[in-house]
Structures are given as structure tokens and as C-alpha cells.
Length: 99
Image (cartoon, rainbow, N blue to C red; front, side, top):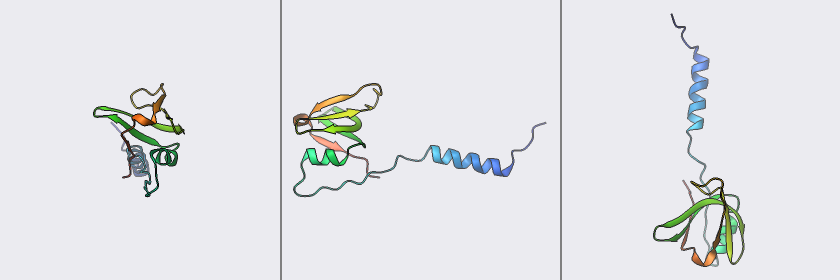
């Protein structure tokens, strides 16, 4: 014979499940007329972005360092134990999750 699960425990389990499946928090992203790619990447330092390098080439990771010539991404998606240093001249677009 099985014992029923107490209501308080059921509620706590449902709350924990809901919180664990909650979407990643959105980031704020604004662009002004005098912005450059470098300035936009600096504003995203410590946050996850996707840099598009070509028609089918992109990397997603956390912005660590930005200089006029390169950007350092860590925690590369699909390659969590790797970092990447990307030539800023090759970046076509920066994609940021906002919702």
C-alpha cells in the first residue's frame, strides 16, 4: 500500500520544477547612433551573446574581454571547456537574447 504525498511537499516539488525550467533571464540591449561593435560588446561583458561570423558560422559564449581588434568569449556553447578569441573585423552581427 502506498502512502499519499502531503500537499505541502507536492506544492514544493511543483515550485522547484517550475523554477528549474524557467527561461534564461533576458538582457537589456540598446543601440545609439555613435555605437560601434566594440562598444556594444563591452556593454555585454559577462553576458552570453552569439557572434555571427558568416552565413553559417557563429559562436555563442560569454563575453570576457573586448579590444579594438579581438573579442574573447568563454563557455562556448557546445564546447564548454573551450574559449575563443575572434577577430572583430570578421564579426557580421552580435545576437543578444532580449526576451
